[in-house]
Length: 91
Image (tube, rainbow, N blue to C red; front, side, top):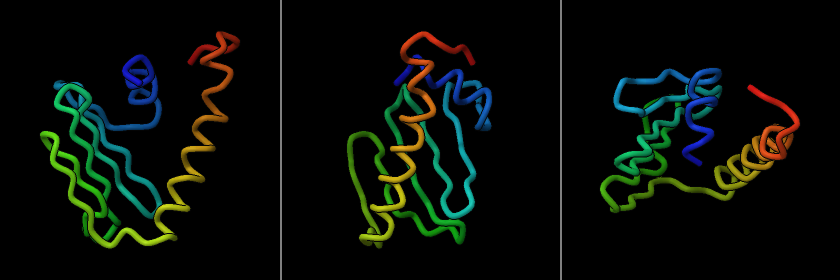
């Protein structure tokens, strides 16, 4: 994933000098620090859905709808990155 962090961060995210980045979506906000392996997914109202910090996982209000939303988002990201991964397109 690290090889895509820079290109994704550059085009879709707010990046910080420590290598972390934040994506603000329509429904969820995502913060990722690949060096510390921290991940926080929160709803727009600030409620944290998933937090992984220093190897400790905390979930809150993870419903089937939330899981389905992230599965769909993951499939879409995979589809969009497919040409990049195969070397047929550069970002």
